Length: 425
Image: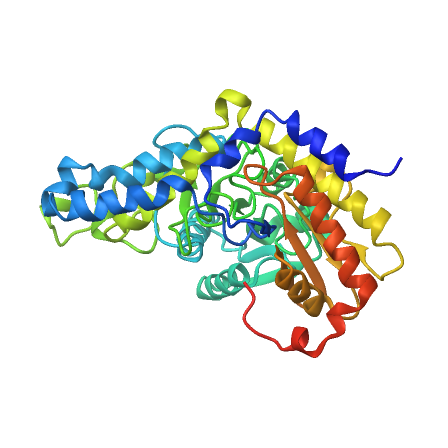
């Protein structure tokens, strides 16, 4: 049976998560399918940042490091994010960027692997060839600095590389849990188990996971994790990232960017560095208070779903939205050369649907943006659409698919202005 717009409207009327949309300041008439690149603006953010600027900074001045709790803000917001990723209080902290945090934890993992392997056989870092490029650049740099190499594999070849004697030279496995281009989910628990059986450590990038789908880092056997604050956590452009190390390992590790905020006693101003106990050792420089305050507002929009089922409820809606979009593309856009590259299997699909087309993918995305349907393009041929259950309705999905059908059927995307390349996030 064909899905109608009224069917979608009925689903929205029955949606218990629908009131959470009111937490966001959304442009009228815009269908925003790019929350996996930059989350929407929470209504609370502007007022909260203004309060930090005018009151805590303007009036409190330097006293606010204590009176407004600035000094512990990265830990407090970290504890909130921990509730979304299966970590405990005091195990996760907000700091720096995703890339910087990856450098910290992967360096710590390689150092720990070297200490566990006095024979020096473990020198290989394994990752997926389609991992996010920045992650690969950092992994390659660190592998070479530690006298080893980065080995890139197709996702399906990673289990065999870790199995049995083949994994004897692997120091660390580093993967983005949800592939940024295809939306395919890696089996965190299964791959972590294989890595551990091989004697390797695991580093997980949760950039497209945190706030999008439930994850339990400790139950899955992860060793290290980092994640992004400006995608599904709605922390704003360039929002600080977060870092987690398994509590059984954290005090065995030392990250390479030893800064004063990560010191065991920062205000001793000692010339000798002693790492703070626990995850606080992964802090480095003075925290960006305005940015962390904005991130907290974004995280709070997700925690508002806890009385309604939390991440499990958000995940259920995300799956419903992505299933609906894939179905509508098949029903309404057939014959126009689109291929769905995101897995149909719910267990393997993140909170996005990626389509591929041999010709015109970039131009089609630009034509949709002109119509008020904001997705993004990933080279060489991927149209990527993110589905944020806090803000999106089923009718938005139906309308987006209809716009896509019209762009394809009319040939609108062939107009020259849509082929003029410009920066696309």
